[in-house]
Amino acid sequence: MSEPHTAERVLIVEDDPATRTGLTELVRSWGFTAEDAADGAAALDKVTAFRPSIIVTDLVMPRMTGIELLKALQPELDHIKVILMTAQGTVDTAVEAVKSGAEDYLTKPLDPNKLQRLLERLAEINTQKRENQALRRQLTDRGRFGRIIGHSPAMRALYQVLEQAAPTPASMLILGESGTGKELVAQTIHQLSPRASRPFVALNCAAIPDTLLESEIFGHEKGAFTGATERRAGCFELADCGTLFLDEIAEMTPATQVKLLRVLQERKFRRLGGRTEQEVDVRVLAATNVDPAAAIRDGRLREDLYYRLNVFTIVLPPLRERKDDLQLLIQAFIDEFNTRDRRTVTGVSPAALRQLEHYQWPGNVRELRNVIERATILAKGDQIEPAHLPVFGTMAPPAAAAAAPATGVTIAPGMTVDEAEQKLIMATLDSAGGNKTRAAEMLGISLKTLHNKLNRFKSDSDS
Image (cartoon, rainbow, N blue to C red):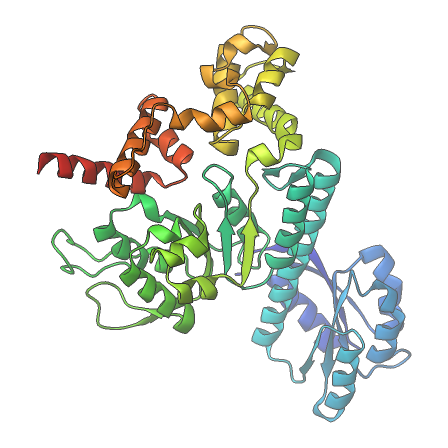
């Protein structure tokens, strides 16, 4: 039995009593709420009280035909979807009706499977529409778009793109610095799409060793390589009919990028060690915190893969460029941690807020969330005070903060690029107190890239 669609009210309009009763019971068995009417005039009487979201109506009926009913419903077609049932001889009339606003038509005798698929599709569309309306109300009332928070002009522009692009099957590329919320945006796109009830699978390409990444994405057969003791499904299999989010796409090896491109083009893949290809229906969302043009130029990102993914591009602004959202984000995090930890913090003192506003947030929203989590734990009263903030929360603003990583770095003529890079990386790591994640964010590179460079420095010094 199908999942219930009790939010969807279906009105069956048919003049033949046996057909009408049979169809109504069938639609109810699929989980819909259904009622019936004997003709178009009776259907109009029921529309106000029953408030159907879908009407399935016969074309030829006494008193009022299906076409006349469609015309009478014209002002309501934004809220009611009409499906026509027609005999073979009136197909041309039904086609004209579709041009006038009917959603679709089915020929008699009805194929129950076709009717069910059509009703399921319209139910998904209606669900998306209701969710979008709810998101718009959230944005108006509270500055939210689902779990995304912000009412600055940059965020409102982002919401508009999400609303337009999410319902489509198009691949999307999400750009933004570390901590700006790329995975959260990908989850929102998935939730607003027809695939919302299907799996959402996320994979950070920078967190997986190169030797294992291909297996993680495509899966492998037993014995495909040393340690492959059993068959394992990859991300494409796990995300079938749903959405796959690939973060840090530029960290993927060129060979794996070629295989990914092939799956996107042909919708087929083969497990490592496998002999047969599998078809897959997956929407791919990709993200990177590096400039794609630079990544292509440096050979880290294949140009053909970039263009295949880049049907829509979403650029997430860093937190320092949307300070208007800072108070909204702070309060949302306070509310979150109050609920989770049973705290009673009501807000931030003016002095603490000034410190938070002056800081440039290289770690973006993720860093802010961590700071507020720590502060709510330390707060003894009902407000977060400067003493509850970490040292970097008191950093002087922009210019000084931007210059900090370069302190103590001397680049002399004749020094090689590798030597200069090593000096900068080590100085930044020292400035970050040995915190590699923070150092990578300050340098604008991924944590995986930083580890690779540090390993190379160590190897060079040992040789």
